[in-house]
Length: 246
Image 1 (cartoon, helix red, strand yellow):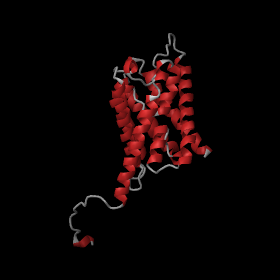
Image 2 (cartoon, one colour; image 1 turned 180 degrees about the horizontal axis):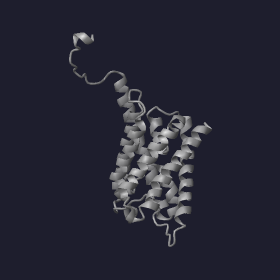
Image 3 (tube, one colour; image 1 turned 45 degrees about the horizontal axis):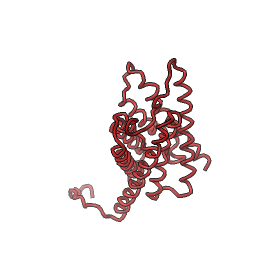
Image 4 (spheres, helix red, strand yellow; image 1 turned 180 degrees about the vertical axis):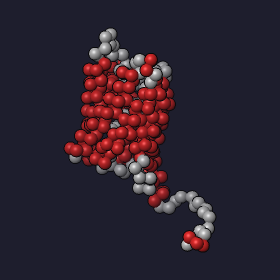
């Protein structure tokens, strides 16, 4: 278990450091041209790279909502859920601390939002609570569908990290203006602790909504998988096999 927890801690550290770091450090300089599209890509790349690096050890969750969603989908035992979440949150907080240490070395540094998530006045686009709630639930729901579908027994081998990383990139492209994109309570917790104040006060939403979406996604993916396993799928007509190939 300790190797799996170490993998989850390191993976979540890399996700938070790379993803939030691209926003706090690189996107703060418009001349670099990274923009929010670059931040979205950075988040996707963190998951893709660490899924290949430590996925065989821990399953590469890096996200409490994913762990809970996979448990709801029947992929993870209940005994792993709490230890995984503790490791993930610890990794995110450590990454945020390292980012703060680096960022504070710049003259005139101000913490500001520090890549934290928020709604209302703390939303990048000033979206309200309901909009942010729906966005986080829907985005995490589909994230779980992609994760469970791409790692199912019948899925093409070795390509799951690509699908998952690209899905996370797409989620960020859509939702950064709304919530600054969470879909991950650990990623939200680390930066919020350093942004402080109202960001910590709004953190509840970025635990509740991703977990709710992940549970729904895990249950639906499990139902779809059960249907596929039982043969409850459309029959696809195929051309007759040529005599020479029989």
